[in-house]
Length: 503
Image (tube, rainbow, N blue to C red; front, side, top):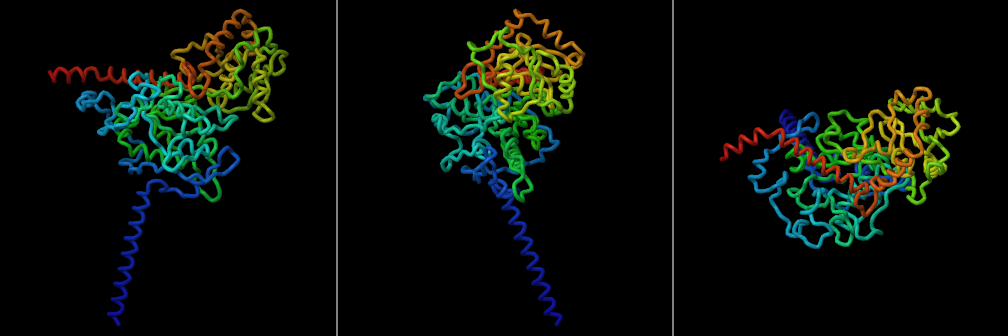
């Protein structure tokens, strides 16, 4: 009887051992899966496009296998930058190593729209699956197709309208890079896409983060994690597994996070990268700051007034215009104070407003018939209202002490904007006295300057010289040059000593 018990005990132990082994083996396969690891398939498939229809989007391109992170991303400082001497010793003049050369790469082709050697900025763009970019717009290419055919305008998916457009620069910049390699598209050639990281000034991450937040941050069914969070986590695992990111800790990567709530789950872990932002209102200085990041204009939602149809000083009966949300938190309390100060003034339009009931068109008409348009800080220092004002040729009055403005290092906003400190703006009678004191001649001078520079805030495809897309690429180029200058200056003594030793 005891022998039977011993035999039964041994069999039981064998079964437990085999079960544990199979469990570990299945876990390993799960961790190594190249796309849907960690997350329920139903969540990845369930994406609501344009707030109306549900599309079960399956990635038709496999993402590169996710390499497990060597270290947890949180609180891990970027690796030290590789010395310039070591880079030159490898025989390349760009920071990222690449041991292979594609015979049909962008650098070797002569039939392209832009010559990479003559470009102001050379950009390497990751071939992320469509689920991270155009797939979020419902686009489905052929099997193995990552990008839409930008040479055929009908093949390019449109971006959702309304307020979604405010943060759509991720869409325009990606289209611009794709078209830089197409011969039959007229291109500024300011930024050109290259196929080799070793030839790039900056590495672009084509994730439509604002669209992901705007339309895919809600839960569906029984899912416990939304698509927006999933994509951010997958993106982090992808980036931390890339040698390009690890070499300098991502400092040469460009990530667009224009919506103030985009990239909430990953921004701190990706803080070493260069961000394209609307402002720094919801970012700690260690994550985002003017030293490394780019401020891009919102895409205005009202129609641009044609220069020849722009009303003059006497043709604009309203002195001051504001329409929008009035009760805001944080810095937005000034809106409420100004509302009670100005709402009963005869030549002031200060009222609540929204996109409903043709609100955008009404706002555009109101701005175009006003001399000054108020741009008051809300929940964040910036808002789309500034760029709607510019599109309407209405002189902006900026009341936001912490605002950062797009490409202000090359554009003097005082030539066409009025700046008022928040504390001064709510002094009784101060603001109206200031604006009424601006004479027709001075206002006309500012109005004419707006007409001259309004093109710099227009997003379009194909891009044109001096438009918003082109200006952003120029800003990135200046930032890259500044970072390189500061790095070289910091290392001047060490480099000098190494140079003397080598001789």
